Image (cartoon, rainbow, N blue to C red; front, side, top):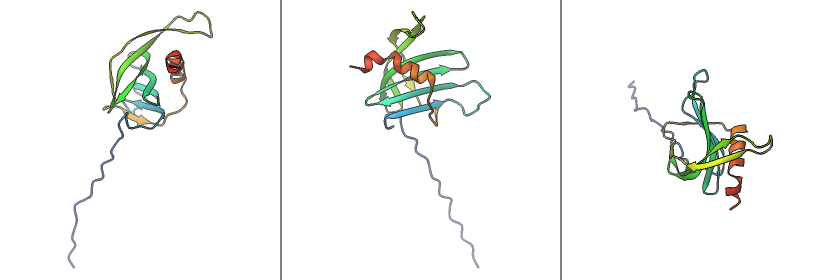
Length: 130
C-alpha cells in the first residue's frame, strides 16, 4: 500500500479594506495583548464618511476625526480637539486638518457601544447635517 501526501492547501484570509466595509460601527487595535498599552480606533462608517476616535493608551493622547476611506486608509481628515466645556452639557470643539490614518497594521475587533465614539459623533454633528 502506497501513501501519497498532497501539499497542504493554504487558505489565506483576505481582510476587507476600510473602504470596502459596510456602513456600521467598527473597532481596530494595533495589538491583541490586553495587558499592554495599545492604540485603538473606533469609528462609524456612514455613506462616504468615517467618523471616529483615535486613542493611544501609551501616550494618553486621544482625538476625534472625520475623513473619507480610500483603500485601507482614511484621507482628507479633519480632527476635532475638545475645548473646555462651557457647560456640563455642551462641549466646544476646535477643528483642524489631520494626517491620514493607515489600517495596514491594525486588527479588527468586535465593535461595541463606546462613549468615545459617541462623543466624536457629536463633535461633527453640524457637519453631518450638510
